[in-house]
Amino acid sequence: MPTHSSGNNLAKMGRLEFRRRVVRGFLAAFLLCLLASIAPLLPSEAVAVDEQAYLTAKGRLQQELTRLAGLAGGTVGVSAIHIESGRQISLHGGERLPMASTYKVPIAVQLLTRVEKGEISLGEMIEVKASDLHLGTGTLTGLLNQPGVILSVRNLLELMLIVSDNSATDLLLRLAGGPEVVTSRLKEIGINGIEVSRSTLQMIADRSGFQLPPEGDWTLKALQDLEAKAPEESRRAARRRFEADLRDTSTPDAMVLLLERIYRGSLLNPETTDLLLDIMSRCRTGEGRLKGLLPPGVVVAHKTGTFPGSVLDDAGIMTLPDGGGHVAMAVFIKSPEAADAKSERAIAHISRAIYDFFLFHP
Image (tube, rainbow, N blue to C red; front, side, top):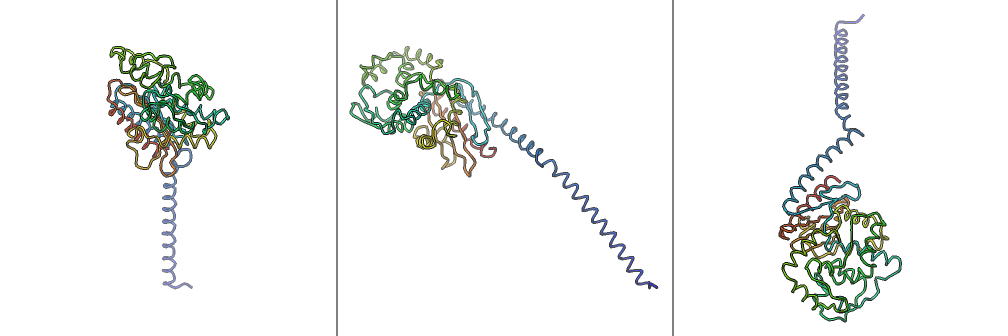
């Protein structure tokens, strides 16, 4: 027969079991609530939340690009794509704007296509004649005033892309098959928004308001005299015509598509692609544009374009840090009233805004 103390023990055990059941019930309810709170963040819902955050950030970037474009004045076209994810942003990305020397990128692509076909060689030596020394940027006209130099196709390619040498460009444009062939090649590969129409010399003559003499009469001195003697009224009228001309223009979207295709290796074989990107990464012009506000060490393979007082461009591929991927970007500014320094700063700010966006929203 149980004693009084044993009855007390049984009662205590009952109370303990009751408490355990209460605690277990509480824990079960807590876990259910916790799972319910986590559930919206699982698979499809989590993707939807991430996408909404991306779209919100993209909208803010779009507003910032519009604000920054206003700092440059004139017409600003911007396009950028994160190559690995395919995410893209643009502002007036479909508007045709002057390429200036960024048109040397499609020339390089067509030239290297001919190299891959065995039609020309990078080691082929090209004589630089008196009629090949042209107006504008570069090294050849700055150092030479007489013929007698022989350079390889590769040397000329480096001069064209690294220091934007116009004399080298016109030689290579001829080797590439001419403007029409370059444009036709682009259309063949599905890039329809880029038009290469003239040599750099012809562009400068058209913009400066003077007529080129027959090619046999071309000398650097003769060309410089023609440019210097063009009447001011002729210059102003020529500049207005030039800025309305659709020749040698591109949409920012089309230029970015070309850069993306270059990087993906769909236009040239891997070795040739690496060569082109390496040369572009050594570009010495426009340090204050796409690269101007980026952190030290960010690699940008790019090509600039400039007509002082009216056109300021930069287009290239930036490498994001820590395996963040690559961004192809083009910023074109047709800004007759803005100072070049002001437009250049606007490009730097636009580039940094896009860099930061894709760094955190690849």
